[in-house]
Each structure stands twice: as structure tokens, then as C-alpha cells.
Length: 185
Image 1 (cartoon, rainbow, N blue to C red):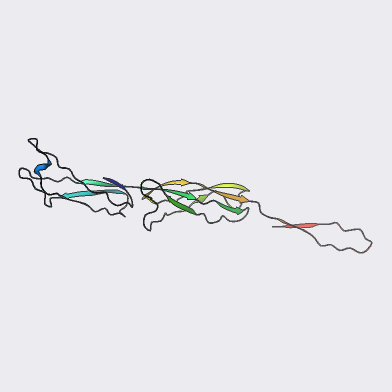
Image 2 (cartoon, rainbow, N blue to C red):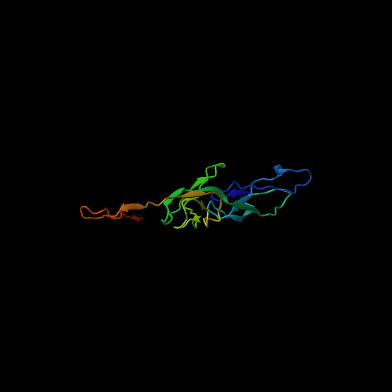
């Protein structure tokens, strides 16, 4: 059997083989106990499915039991980086993301109180020129999830400079002094 991490275990089933003389399951009464240690929150991996006699019986047969396995696969999710903006020369804003369900079967987002570890990344720094830079998955991960990642965009806008005319003085009748200005940012 297989299932996705965070989903409930499937109904565990069994089969009986080895009948002789054209006999079928009609000669068997009862049913075995079928179980696994895997729970809904069990990590991705393989878990043993065991069987035991319970009340299984047949007049002409004895039973041997073969374990099965339950494979827990990664939960598919889509992570989208939020678009951000900043001004040239400023530090980067906090990079954030949202998680949406994969849209397959029942809605699947993050299971229970799970989180993703790591952080998003961008190549932009305080000295990156005006324009755009990608926001990427960086180290964002969780081994129980198959992440489809949608990059975001960091838009870097122009910094504002202030041009101020410098105050000047002159004596009546003299020529105007050389006019000057200062630029601050």
C-alpha cells in the first residue's frame, strides 16, 4: 500500500494464496488481524504491515503470514515567494512565502503544525542597481514534502536625492555671488 505523508492510512487488506483442489476463499472462515505502526503523522519512509491469525480458520489448511509494507510518500505542496520591493541602498526586506495545496485529491497543504525550515534567498544586496532580482527557494525545505517552488521578484526602486539651493548673501549693488547647491540622500 502507499499513501502521502499526512494523509490517513489506507484500508489495510490481505490476500490468501495456495488453495488446492480448485478450492477458493469459501473454505476459509474469519479474518486475520492486519496492522501497521504507521500513523497519519509518520515520516516519509516504509513501514511494515503485519498480519496475525485472529479468528482465521480452514479445515484443510494451516496459515503462514507474510508481512507487507506501507510506503509513505512526500506530500506535494506549492510554495510561492511573495513579491517585494525596496529602495536602492536599503537592506533587503524580509522574504516571505505562502504555501498552497497541490490540488490533487483532497486539499493538501502543510500537515498539522508542520513548518518549512531554512530561508528564501536573493542575490540582491544594498549595492544592487535599480531593477529586479529573483527571490528563490534558497534553503527552504522539509523532507516530508515535495516542493514545487514559484520564484518571486524583488523590485529595486530609485533612491531619492534632495537638491537644496545654498543660502547666499550679497551687498546691495554688488553682483550676485556664484549660486551653489548641495545634494543629500
